[in-house]
Amino acid sequence: IKISKSYKLASRDFHPDDTIIDIKGVKIGGDNLTIMGGPCAVETPEQIDEIARLVKAAGGQVLRGGAFKPRTGPYSFQGIGVEGLAMMAEAGKKHGLLTITEVMTPEYVDVCSEYADILQVGTRNMQNFDLLRKLGTVKTPVLLKRGFSATYDEFLNAAEYILAGGNPNVMLCERGIRTFESYTRNTLDLAAIPVLQDLSHLPVISDPSHGTGRRELVEPMSKASVAAGANGLIIEMHTDPDNSMTGDGVQSLFPDQFAKLLKELEQLGNLV
Ligand code: PEP
Ligand code: MN
Image 1 (cartoon, protein in one colour):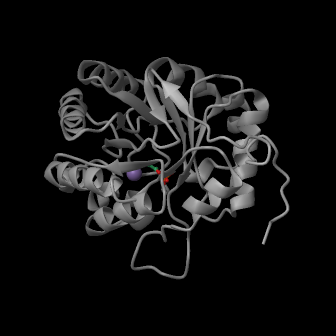
Image 2 (cartoon, rainbow, N blue to C red):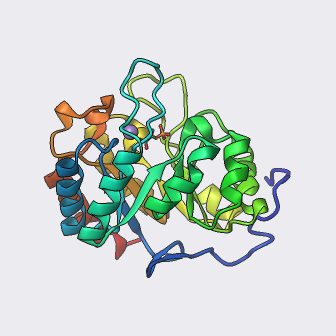
C-alpha cells in the first residue's frame, strides 16, 4: 500500500540513493552503524567528561547530552543551558567524539550550532514549525525525533520543512510512540525503521532508551533495531543513573552494560 505523499525532498522517489551525512569524517547513513551515547542531561564538567571517556572507549562515535531539557512539568529540572553546551563541547573534543544536543527554540539554534555537531529536535517539538524552518537555514545536521503521536507522513513532512529550507542534513529518529500499553514508557515502533527507509533516503536512528523507558529493554531493542536495519542508535548511559538529574536514570545503561552492548552489536552487524 502506498500512502499519498505530500513531501518531496524527503522522499526516496526524489532521491533514490541513501543520504550519507559526513560529519568531520564520521559517516552517518548507508551501511554505517553510528552509536550515540551519553546522559539524558549534562550535569557537571566531571560527569560529562567521564561519560565521554566511556562512550569513546566502548566504540561510540557521538556524545549525547541535553543542556536544554523539554520537561513535561514546569517544576522539573530544565537543564543547565549554555554552560552545559560548553562542557559537552569540551568533553567531545577531548575524547574525539562528535556531540549532539537538543535545541528547543529558534532563538537558540545558532548558539547550539556553535557548540554541537548535531542538533536534536525532541519528540514534543516535531511539529514546532518555526523551529523546523529555522533549522532549514543552517547547515548543522539535525536529528529529528518522531512526535510520540505522529504518523510516518507527518514525520516526513516535518523533515521536509528542514530540507525545503535548504538544510539537507537530516536524520530521522524513532523514539517510541504512545499506545495503550503503560508497562513501557513508549512503544518503540520497530516497523518504522524499514518503512521510513523505504519511503525516504534519510538515515534512520533508533532510540531504545526513550522507546522503552526501561533499562533492561535497551539491549534487546537495540539489537532488534539493528536487525531491522537502523543506521544508528542513540542510547542513554550514565555513571550514576540512580542519582541523575532527570528521571531518565531508570532507562540509562550503566557503563559496563553500554560497553557490552556495543561489543555484541559489532558481532550482530556481521549477521544482518
Ligand atoms: C532526550 O533525548 O533526552 C529526550 C528528551 O528525548 P525525546 O524528545 O524523545 O523525549
Ligand atoms: Mn532523556
